[in-house]
Image 1 (cartoon, rainbow, N blue to C red):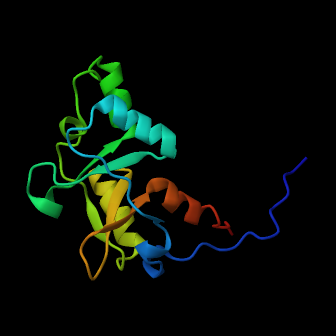
Image 2 (spheres, rainbow, N blue to C red; image 1 turned 180 degrees about the horizontal axis):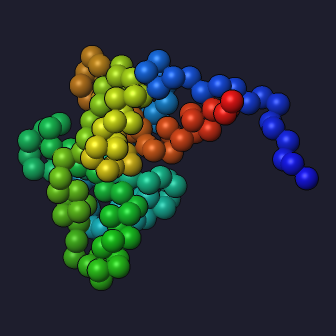
Image 3 (cartoon, helix red, strand yellow; image 1 turned 45 degrees about the vertical axis):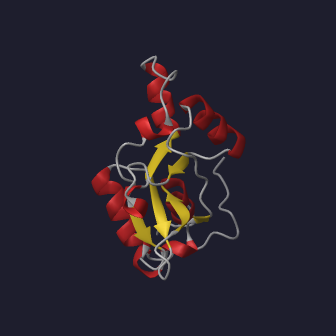
Length: 148
């Protein structure tokens, strides 16, 4: 039996016509760089999110924000190195950021080039984090795409 098409299926908008602000999750869950990795795992689980931002991991201000993802925590667990590690240890590299006014086409390009699943979204006026854009956010937008 063929599956029925949902009645409300729409064509996905072009990625170069959608602003990051229209697809992102507003708000950023953060933790301090010295937060134990086990506590980071608890934050991820309690909020049912896939990443936590770690502000100012190297004392350089906004330029040194990092991200700890659920995959980072799983990788540390697989290596047997959760105990004694902190968010700052895992988020040692800078998070990729994108402006809320950029288009999704640019966001997808950054995610693909850098092989990351999350971008920190910064306010156009403030330059401060205002949200997170994930590959799931992009997939949600593309899910409405109708072939043919």
